Amino acid sequence: MKVLSPLTNSLGIFTETYRYLQKSNHPEISVDQLKIEWAQSTLARLGVELEVKGEISNEKSMLYMGNHISYLDIPLLMATVNKISFVAKHEISSWPIFGEGAKKIETVFVKREDGDSRKSARKAIHAALNDGKRVAIFPSGTTCISEKTSWRRGGFEIAQDNDIYVQPFRLSYFPLRAVAYIDQDFFPFHLYGLFGLKKIEAKIEFHEPVKIKDAVKDCEYWHHWSKEILDGSRN
Image (cartoon, rainbow, N blue to C red; front, top):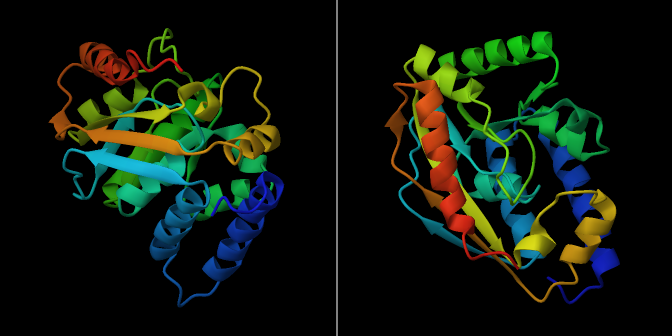
């Protein structure tokens, strides 16, 4: 897929996403199937070589929580976990094309510094879980590779309060810094840069589902567990 120029491929991501959005408006089309197709197509276009470790739970009413490195985490999870939706920062809802796509897959948007918004997001997540849906939460609240900031424990509290299983995951990429969307990276330029890479290696590891008994301690434990995959991967 990378035989085309980085610019052509970058524009192709936008046009293909728009095409999938248009297809999703047809009532006879399965949005869940389109999600998988879009994710697989996007990863293939970028030349991502994906390695999956661990057994993925497809039980209903499941929370998936792990580290967050790049916007590539989204198609990565969509390609591996069936019928998954996400919790994302509110600003993504206004992104051209991709914001509409996020709405279409029932993303829960949250302004993390706004108490009312966090409360509304918790209610939306609870409702989704009650409806048997699978929801991915990135407890870091943003993309990062240093993992110095403590995880937010809201997702763990939701799991504990509602007796919901959590399947922890951890992911990494090579080359890590080139794929990571952090600091002052600008999305169009960053995406363009990805198509200039010879290859992208992605690894996602799933732990078996766990019950959350102490949100504070379990949040710290799984944060530490997720960081282990990045040890020695600074590149």
